[in-house]
Picture 1: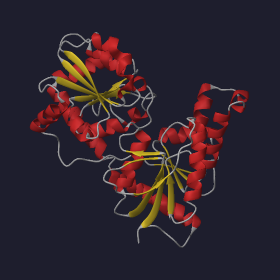
Picture 2: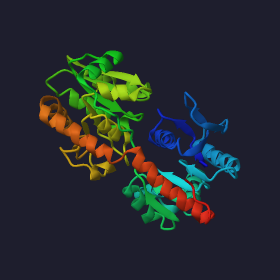
Picture 3: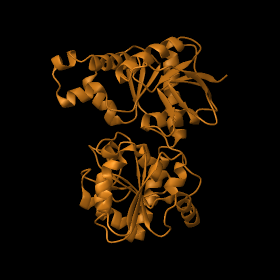
Picture 4: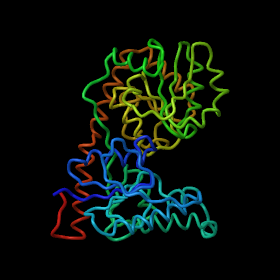
Length: 380
């Protein structure tokens, strides 16, 4: 009999942000072993692979109030009928809690915010209460996407009941894109076939470092086409930088792309000079597709501690290192041996984080959670 699994997330969408995409990928990988019900406010699945319970939204656009509403509704909806309740949200209930971002507790500590300012903010008080209930309640098993987030959280929340680390998984393709497939991918996207193609993926252009990419490309002595994948509403903020790219350079805002494998196939490299990332899935996905990566090192990108500079990826010391980004892009385009080595080593790095490995670790957590509640019952 399959384990009856409820997944809690406000937005269940593969093309959403990192946490949303993580929930979809994890659920998809578990389809053969679990009977899955998604409890969410938004549900973007076609074809529909999962049973879905819709949670309404409050008519007012206040995120913290909606979070409290979502918490109350999902608690009511998942009181019975499930072996495991797995939450990807800040909720007071759920056997397993995936923590994929810096906690509010850690953020306030880092900013040195005074106690009285916190006490005067209903929003902060609500988030702090949710986090305490989420992670410090007996029987709640918190799963962190990186050791950094776990250690950072435990330093400010020593009462966490159970803390383990399971890094996100990635789908490993059966083969590397051939030259013909790369040409076909560019044709589908309306790109030139023989021009260096730099990919940028992310919904928050500022946080992910688009300005650094544009400024660096303007310095390059050869033609470059940049494809920006993500919410295009911020594109107008970069008009001046795009105009300064120069002859032979272009930047196209592709919006949200549903066929990401095709987008990665079109890229010669992924530029991700992020200012803040815990475990960026776009980096892992690019590596799995044999796409060389340029990204920032820690503390801006905590994945940097796991990567070897100029072996697995090219790591920048600062997000605004324009000269360093320009040099890295030049090396990838002009040095075929380095380009091939980065693609090969990046792929080998990504293989360590397949979904087969990740879900096996999650099942261990599920077993422990069920054992805590029902010592004689263990999920498959």
